[in-house]
Length: 172
Image (cartoon, rainbow, N blue to C red):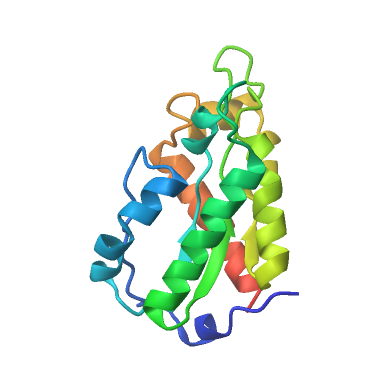
């Protein structure tokens, strides 16, 4: 079991800094890291969720795969750790891109998922497996949580937040 010891002291009044930038890939996270840490230079917890935009880099000739994605995530984790003096991480493996007509995954994001597993084990990090939960949503739930083939509605964001909160509680 992985522990998130710093979270034991957090409560509902915890300060949150959302440094996310829509449309970014993991590589983009490297580029804007300094700007992100200006919002909160010494976070107790950093949660990382990439994949939906990174999967667009996978083409037959690009050479981009889960190993390249893993190297980018690994570098980001190490840089955040170095710049913050150490922090806790939760890796969130994202959601599938679905075909809005069939509700089936297009299997674009899933090839990157092994990178999350390996890094979670390598560093002893908490992994929040949202992917498998979203893969098993009913059509009604998909319509409620997705506003298009990958982006979340407000209800979907609340649902994602609840999954992350549950993972945190299970790992305290």
